[in-house]
View 1 (cartoon, helix red, strand yellow):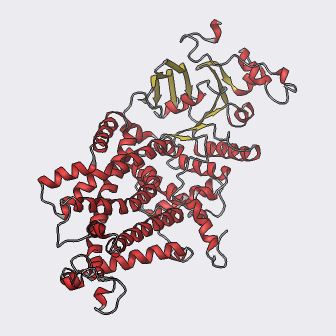
View 2 (cartoon, one colour; view 1 turned 90 degrees about the vertical axis):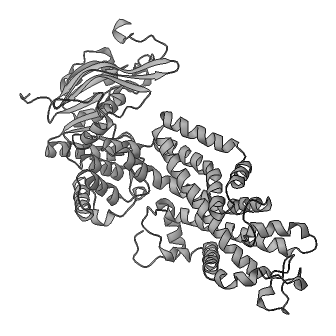
View 3 (cartoon, each protein chain N blue to C red; view 1 turned 180 degrees about the horizontal axis):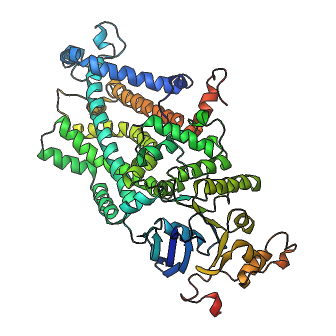
Length: 290
Length: 300
């Protein structure tokens, strides 16, 4: 790795949801760094805290959720930052693509006006200039006839196209770090491949760092250089992606790898991990201690 | 109201007979209420006891008496015309004020949450539990019963309906992914409320407002009936209904005609608003487009 300072430095990050029945720790103190231009996959089953991690990086965890620890972005501490200051960073420095592409566009505005609004509100462009940039962006994410399709509404696009538009919005302001929270989960496999290729290309072209949250090993393999495996809110394994694949050290990673259709031919081959301890287990009990 | 889809194509209106009927009734009514009362107010209040309970659809006494006369021999047609202006002004202003205020406060309350939400909702609860008629009675007894005061009192007592609806819908909308997506792009709260949430709540509020038109006309009538609403020689439809109710058995037209006017207006308003809601919704618009004939070469 180069000597440049890391794009993102996460130290002891914890996300806890305070409920009437007690605190539910979603993320229990994780640390990692993201190098400029690196593509990092956060891998884990549902409930492992990977999405909560992604949301907390952008300050999108709302009460009763509580974020502690430190997220440093180019010398700025993001945890505990005011909403107003966060808004100057969101979109421009850190940006996010969400899982549910069907619902992540406002149904009552045309695509062109939603994309254009990003430029008008954040970059202060005129209506015409914003429209031009919107067309450029739509072309960049692979939408045909962008000028004609500007006036179409979200429901007139397929799921894959909508996710492309969401990606376009997320990269509109040239962020340094793009966080993708399971962006292909709602899409079928052939469409997935296109989106993943697009993300990879955009990341290289624009020299962004990418954090890719997924539960799908095959997907992680297509986009990421390195991987973090999370379970029960902790990082259980990390490393360069191919090394982890070839030589998984943690039994959970091993179990995840074994769950691949090529390796597991009968359901008996699967080794499900125990259910998430949730509220039943006192906080602090982790896999290692069991 | 804003039209997020960027204007309503008028050719769509022709596709719906009921919407045309509703729109025409309202247009004619507004025109009549705006223009005619200046000329006929004096004649409308002219009492001719010889023509007391004159039956409608007679031709003997000129066009003014074509819809009959009321208990004091005032011409029904002219009374209806003058009443239209008052009814529309009172109902329109009341509904506009209460809907806009309730809409704004409801969205704010739902989006902000926390103590602001609690305070605003408890205030709405208080407004809801105090009988609106009693409140109006008290206020109008203390203040002078004028159209302005009437509108203000009715607007305040009618507000909680919009407030609750707007708040409930905001609570649901603010959890939607596109709101989170806007946040992730650095949109301010004000922008999210005005651009992401308000346009989706507006159609509901507008439909509700149209339905409320009839309620407000009748609420104004009950106040007139109690003697603290409008005072003669001012007249509105509700007051006419109230005046005629004791003669219902002998002279039905004194009650039924203004009643029909209220009904037709309320119905037109709600049909039109329903149609607008459907046409404005980008996902439903296609159905309207395919029903009315599409121009050749239109995109599928």
